[in-house]
Image (tube, rainbow, N blue to C red; front, side, top):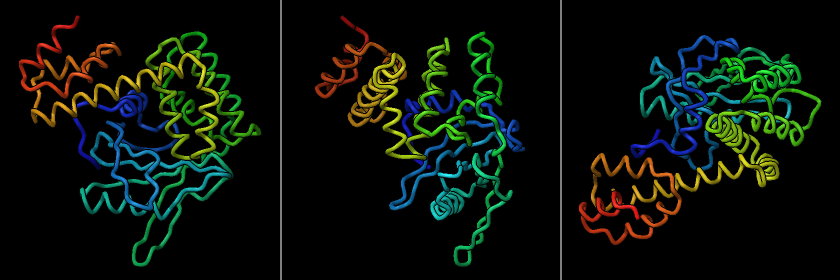
Length: 286
């Protein structure tokens, strides 16, 4: 996988808030619950896994999505799954969620002497309009979403339907914008945006940009991402200088949410020469 700093990235935090504790039993998978999202190193010329989860039984779940327009890259899937098995010795289960025409329950491919088997979960019969209406009613009434609702909400843009993608996605995004909990709303929008960009690429990104550009939630996501980047930059610079940081300083930086303060710290941090100077900067905010 990869080496991380002590703190989750903005995207990781959103994925973990959305998926932690999910078991996928609502879509017919008998699995342990999700512990956390996993990011993997980039392998040149191969497409990154769409979703990779560490489960509570310490196995990994590699999940891809397909429909009539989107097809999985089996060669890349094999390369990443095998690299994880060989490098980390962890069990990887590979599942494809199919929202298009009905497919067989398994997909087998041979790559030389390697035999590769993936499970296909057929979700082609799901009624996107009905699910959209059910979730809409729950959001409007303030009822909490259950596990199946959460998964339906995340995967709604990819379900088989008469609506083209560039019309269906904004419909889902506008549904999310009605959520009352701002952190929850931003988490779902970040997750769906990231999945769309990984899965569909430029087309999906352009549709997302067009929708999010002038919306309140789009500005919130951008603002949160900017602050996250500033905090990470400050910590990286300090770790280069001092190798380790006192806990009180680390947590003060990690929890700082004022953009002006973060900018001031980022401008001054390169000239800091001692931990005492650092404490003076962090704990004496003008």
